[in-house]
Amino acid sequence: MKITVRINGANHTRDVEPRLLLSDFLRHDCGLTGTHVGCEHGVCGACTILWDGAPARACLAFAVQAEGHELRTVEGLAPGPGQLNPLQQAFQDSHGLQCGYCTPGILMTMTAFLEENPKPDEAQVREALSGNLCRCTGYQHIVDAVLRAARAAEQRKPNA
Amino acid sequence: MKPAPFAWHAPDELEAALALKAEHGGEARFLAGGQSLVPAMNFRVAQPAVLVDLNRIATLDTLGFTADGTLVIGAMCRYRRIERDADVARRLPMLAEALAEVAHPQIRTRGTLAGNLCHADPASEMPAVMLALAARFLLRRKGGERLVAARDFFLGPLATALAEDEMLAEIHIPALPPGSGTAFLEVARRRGDYAMMGVAAVLRRGADGRCAAARLTLCSAGPVPLAADRAASSLLGTRLTAGDFAAAAALVGAEIDPMGSVQASPAYQRHLAGVLVTRALSLAAERAA
Ligand SMILES: Cc1cc2nc3c(=O)[nH]c(=O)nc-3n(C[C@H](O)[C@H](O)[C@H](O)COP(=O)(O)OP(=O)(O)OC[C@H]3O[C@@H](n4cnc5c(N)ncnc54)[C@H](O)[C@@H]3O)c2cc1C
Ligand code: FES
Ligand code: FES
Image (cartoon, rainbow over all chains, first blue to last red; front, side, top):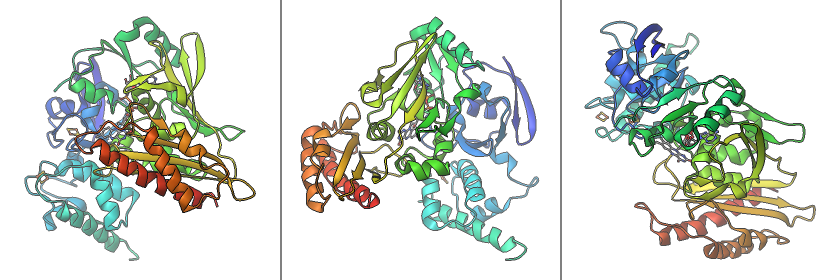
């Protein structure tokens, strides 16, 4: 069936089977391969995207269900080609990634988290990270990166 | 893996969804948040021929209190909405407290309370919380409905009182009377994982300060969410002291039947039950003061 899904502000119209997972739709049909697939049962978090602004697993929804919703993927974060947004920059500066497999899902999880909690403490960051697995970093540098991004946002505020 | 093919229906109206379920019976499954059903379909453990998707039925996404203080939660009300509701946090704090332990934020964005209860995982926090809060479930089918007490709903692991053509349409949670205190505590390997053991306690103090009502329920403690009624009744009329809690915790051991898992042996689960019952009761008693 024909569907139109809004991703990072652009419409994508494709002919799909109802059983097509949203994660596969993003990667294979739309070519947005930044969303990664690790487990396909909701556990690893690599496929996390923003669904109407809230973090959700792309592997646990069907593409046909996304019609009429606003999706955001990791491709929607950077302000332009070759550039990083402040959260991505903080991951680079804090060595918050090694192989990078988990990184898109973590960036999307933390984008939503920081919007709701602009000044988190370390315990809150660790709790927010509980739904994303990373096999490389031991998490410390990821936590550092998120705290760094929050501090940087605070300093960018006009009155700070 | 990928799901097997299915026919997908996404009606806008409740009646259409009930008619589809009546027509297709056991061949069809309702699709709510998909956070249990889709993993099962990806593994092909579940291969429904028909999916009746409830996500477009706006009238099922409801959350509100009636005049007598009952909280009514519609079938498509997601965890995310419940856990962010200030009135729920104030009037039924145990619900918010336990929801924070259910899965991860990304799962709570889409998962629904009704879907959780219909999935009936004995390790899930929510069935035990529904028992502790004396919830009732409104089951609807084409041309009829009935109310079932949470106590009578859970029949076994992944088995409920739902008939093939029935939907869990609404969850009704009665108001807690003045003088009540509640607590939910669990131990899990990692934040958001299913509990190795979880305990929900509801206590009420009378005007004389003594215990006037008590309910104690556990998850991961048997094939269904368990109500430890003997332990709870042992508290009635007591002053809710540490000694009373220890006596109740000792009784719980005879009322549970933990099955063990790769993470925890039955003996360890029993140990956790004793510790958590004592802690949950003292916390609930403090909050009932
Ligand atoms: C990584 C991960 C971790 C998790 N951790 C936990 C946890 O710690 N604790 C916990 O409790 N849960 C946990 N869950 C499960 C989660 O809570 C699910 O959201 C919930 O169990 C199912 O709700 P749903 O709305 O997603 O239902 P769905 O997956 O859509 O449906 C579940 C079942 O119920 C049926 N159904 C759904 N709605 C209705 C209805 N209204 N009437 C009749 N039948 C219906 C469906 O047909 C299906 O059989 C976890 C899930 C994941 C992926
Ligand atoms: S691929 Fe979706 S959570 Fe692992
Ligand atoms: S950086 Fe390799 S999995 Fe996280």
